[in-house]
Image 1 (cartoon, helix red, strand yellow):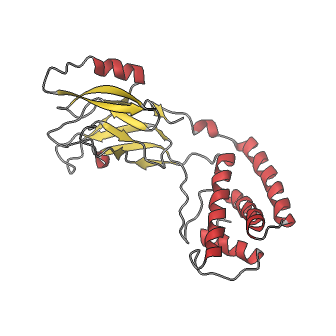
Image 2 (tube, one colour):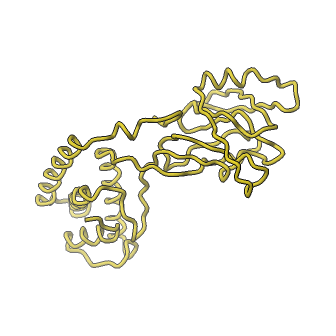
Image 3 (tube, one colour):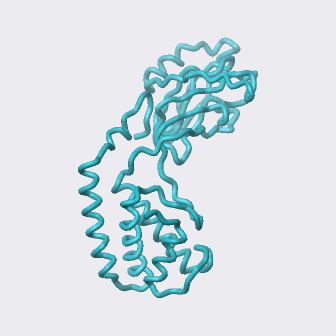
Length: 253
């Protein structure tokens, strides 16, 4: 059964024979337990590799006028299956164009052919691992191509300086895999299959006893081991994670 963060914290506090709370923020102890649930969740989410959580998202704009064609993947995005950009004359004119991915070498070959001697070509310097690289781009048309040398930074081949000072987050329209995000909120429900909630609860109980009471909880540890084995067996028979990482165009590694 799926539970909110508050319900998980209340269950763990009851096992610890601690005071009841109505919010995870009612005291230091409940906040410590919420942190333990978060840490266990982040460990579990790597182990169980949940089924694809796909959705729409915007890229993050650089907001740096000296780097107008640079954007970044949002923190909760794992991959891009497709991308569109609003090339309309304003945000209300929703004329979305497909933006095609190019491998970094192909992208550099494409932009290196631009002549900086003309008014509609500019360049910018971007650092990767402490090394500066000059990137050329057009400033008179909305983008057609993009690439990513590090799976975080997104570079485009152009932007329309008559419409915007830099590429705009709200003009991007991306679809892909999104990483589960843990929120410290009472009504937050962790992104897990129903079958993994008992495992998360018992992992957190064991960790809470170790950290907060400097003792062990044999019952929770036994349940955790059984549930972990069951989870692994279920994953072996229903695993479709290859679908998660199948990409069209561009994906974060």
